[in-house]
Image 1 (spheres, helix red, strand yellow):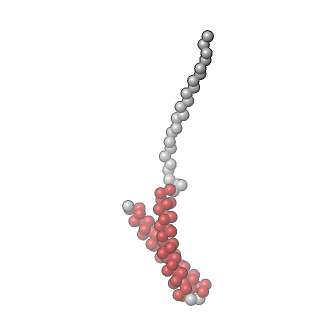
Image 2 (cartoon, helix red, strand yellow; image 1 turned 90 degrees about the vertical axis):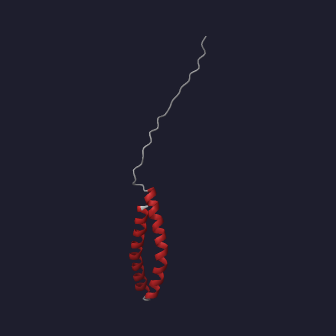
Image 3 (tube, one colour; image 1 turned 180 degrees about the vertical axis):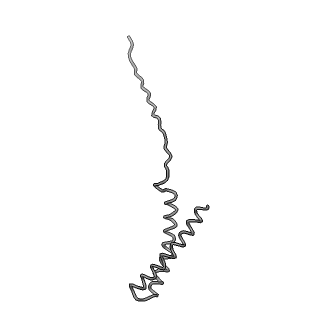
Amino acid sequence: MKTKYRHIIKTISWRIVGTLDTIALGWLITGDPMVGVKIGGIELVTKMVFYYIHERLWFKFSPFQKVKSIEIKPQLKITINEDVE
């Protein structure tokens, strides 16, 4: 539970930074601050949701986690049927 809480807080703080950047860029490109605010408001929600899902999946299925090794011992059984006279 502690890691989920940390991921939620990290998600929110990162989105604040990202949204401010998006608002500034939208304003800079269009010259209209309201366009930046509108774009920033939409992406605030969508990217927060996507980031949280990404973070949880990365945490659960990270390729950098230690993999438990499984030892497989093959069993070989050979039966020879010979006709004895």
